[in-house]
Length: 178
Image (cartoon, rainbow, N blue to C red; front, side, top):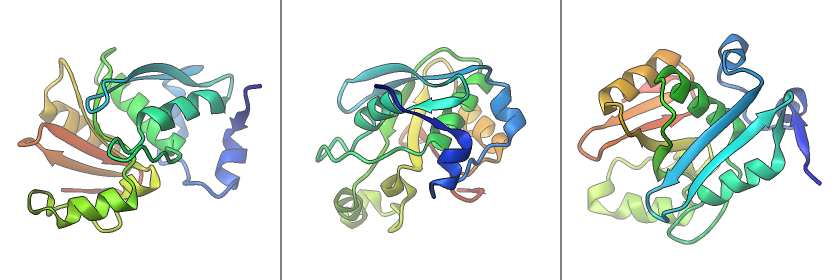
């Protein structure tokens, strides 16, 4: 049986509050869908994760699996507000292409390993990746600079720009940029 979570139940359940204003979410229509292409596992997902006023738990479980820590297989719930941010970002970019995922959930062990590696010295000790609230992506057919600028314009959380690594970081933490 598919369990659905109403927005109010989700927010009151202690999870991260919605980072996007309701008018922005309303612009997405009656259904919210995402297409993801995990570059490390080769897994692809095209899923409607919100419909008829609620999040679909089966779809959220599929997202959690595709965005798991590919280094050790550990899964963690991905914040639905992050999915909403991605759906809005893709809509504003006027793209039907899947997000190319560089990093979704990152376990504490993986985060510590990346922090200790010389080439990853910019990894935060309390990374929102470890809470399922951050993702590193690019979008085929759209420039990285345009993706970055559009993410900044949403003012829905943190946005990091990594042109030398070919990705943009977005999260649903506090609004900030780097």
